[in-house]
Length: 161
Image (cartoon, rainbow, N blue to C red; front, side, top):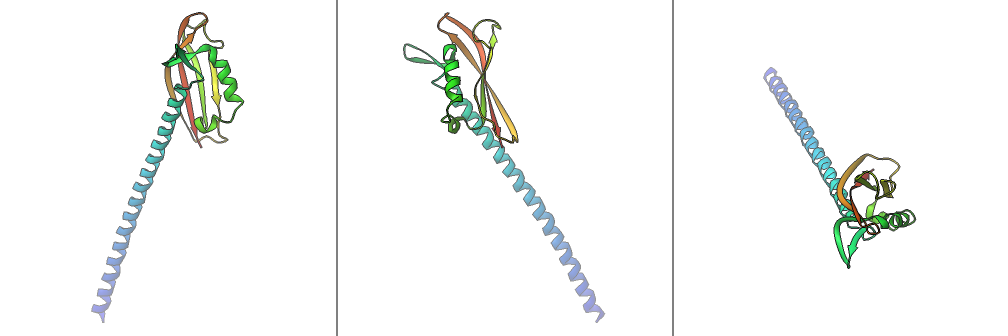
């Protein structure tokens, strides 16, 4: 009888060790899966931020054009106030830019050109912000009235809830 009890105790000890190993393995597995899901969510948010930045840099409402030829990374200073008014008074831009802020900042020279030198073109922010990704796009600010060019940056900040 004592031999049977000893074998039963050994079996129970082996089962306890086995379930401990299974528990550690499952914990490790779920941590890896959670880490992979977080990485995919971050990559997805970054992809959306880049897409929105590309859409903003190629807006026909702001782009320079001469003889029906559009210039890349160029913003017409005369179009900025009209584009700002159109975007503030319309909900049709939300599906394009979602929760983001698009600003144009004149860098050089510090005087002349745009007034004020920092203008927000589009702004929509959620009630709660979990993260913000900023993209800085160098642009040429062209003034066709005075025939001058300035250097600026388009800042596209994309918010995630």
